[in-house]
Amino acid sequence: MDTFEKIRALLAEQLDLDPEKIEMDSDIMADFEADSLDIVDMVMSLEDEFGIEVPDEAIEGLRTVGDVVQFVDSHKA
Image (cartoon, rainbow, N blue to C red):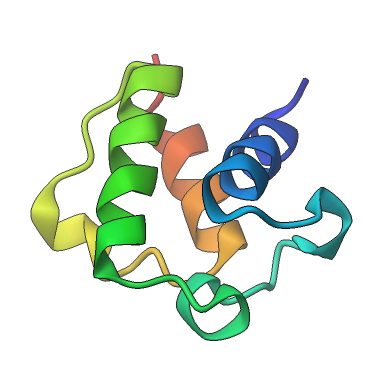
């Protein structure tokens, strides 16, 4: 399973969404009505799932699903 598929499954479960509606250019907050608490949960899940650390200053840059995939791919071991 590639990074996008893992993140899509994670977001679908966390935000109670149909995975088919989650695309690389989906805006997590605007398209899925995620709030700041959802974003914190997502970041913690990413850290657990991929064994990475997401610094607070990087979180603002994670607007779309593609941003998240790119961040994870560039930081995972």
